Image 1 (cartoon, rainbow, N blue to C red):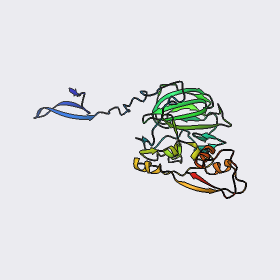
Image 2: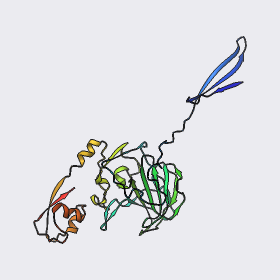
Image 3: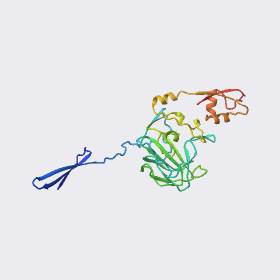
Image 4: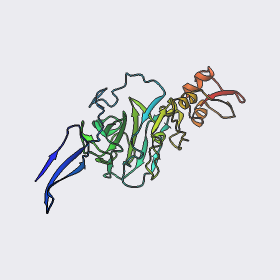
Length: 292
């Protein structure tokens, strides 16, 4: 005969085993078995701006910088099973912002979630094609675009590494690839600032502070890998906000477009910093201030 005792507040199960031993009578032995508790996050990630139809439900919300992101994992799941080849980085591309990274794949390749979370959106989005957006438990959202097939639905709970869709070429796309975006409350974040896209699949830090440098494509070039220096404290983030200036000397044949592209600045920012108009003629030897 055995008696089981479980306290609702206890983390273990106690079982009493009754045995009879020669010359000793009734012996009661107690065995204690640890209980496995549910470790799922208790955070209600649907509490704020949860919308299953709008791609960006934070469009009218102004965020304060720097932003703080915390991770409980040290690694993420690669969204594709094969070697990750980034064909286009986060940054300025063709006169427009490219707010994510493009990862090469073949139409029909499986795509999985990079972290635990809940599907906020799973539908066709103009420009993005078939799209899945997952909100994770630290508030970060990951977007998987240009999919050929969506195999999940809004409000589904998703585990890290769980299959969600097939890669493809839908929407505004010139070839099969996965467009992966990361955002926090509507602010796009350079994916390579948060994650190492080498085979290590590592998250760069447990605590990351994000400045506007890492939320605006104009500070980066989609053709190159940006140099990453992760800010792990608020003090470091605030110190980095002090604008660094350099001087560019105009050469023969230079145009505002050429100068802005070479220095990862928009033409508007270049004009505003130097109090000139887009139509202003440039002179050889003229000095322009660049804010980096």
